[in-house]
Image (cartoon, rainbow, N blue to C red):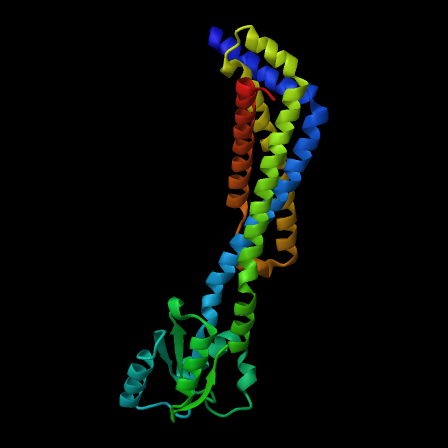
Length: 293
């Protein structure tokens, strides 16, 4: 029963501390909110970069159009040769009939009413394996396939691949740098805010310490205060981020295919910041009890 009373008292003291020392704590929470928002934005951008990287695999493909549908033996021979090229993961033969069927699924049939018969050529669709997905391998493969007498044209999104490869590292480096920067700033802010709180209550803490108060009795309110500060600041940042994200997705629904839901990132960031604030509070108060400010 006594333990329950003491725990309730310590918890009440933590909440009272937030109100009593609001001059120090409110700016701290505001700064945690801003840094948390930027941290969530950086992590979401990093997750978006990973998502874009997985989608970019579809760019590393080649479609070889044929003059005429090859005989069975010729098709098998071409398939074996192309599958033997370095970096080729898979190859699919698309007949004229299959090409026409796919065209009708994507476009209205009226687009073909002036054309007699089936104007679409047969083709080979080639996908490059992930370990070989780079601009050089894609270009080399296009050149090799273009050399076949049966091939009338080769199609591949080389220009898009070139743009992606020249820019993709920015998708990863910038969010990682910003996330690391925000974490460093957060820890510095948390540490300084807790030191200021301790300074304002220095005499009270020392009196409790010399009166026989246990380290747990002294540390618990500060740790709980830190946990609450981290939670309040990061929770407000999550609310703002989700509001902006949902507004953006309502305006551009097509982005749903490329932008993964950031709820997991938000929850993890919120938990990490709250626990980090509590940990920083514990370390700062413990250091004070051992060495003083």
